[in-house]
Image 1 (cartoon, rainbow, N blue to C red):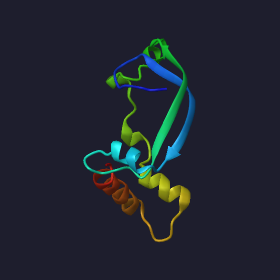
Image 2: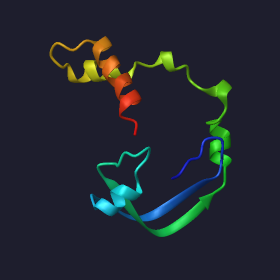
Image 3: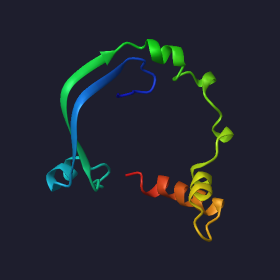
Length: 106
C-alpha cells in the first residue's frame, strides 16, 4: 500500500520486487548528491485504488487522535532493553539514533 499523509485513498500493488546495486540505477535514485547503497525494482502485475473508508474510520490523519510520542519508549530505549549491548546506556543509544537521523537521512 502507498500512503500519502492527509490523503485517505490508497494504492495497492501486486507484483514482484528485486534488489539491485546497478550503478546507473543508484545514480538515478540519488538525493542531495548521495546515492543509496541499494535500490528496489518493482514489477507491477496489478494495481488497485482503494477508497478511504478504512482510513477515515481510523482517523489516521487527525492530529487530535494521535498518540503522544512520549507515551511510548524511544527507539534507543527499545534497542538497549531488547539487545542489552555491553556498556551502552539508553542515553547513548538515543544519541546515536538522533545523530543518524541528522547525518544519514540522505
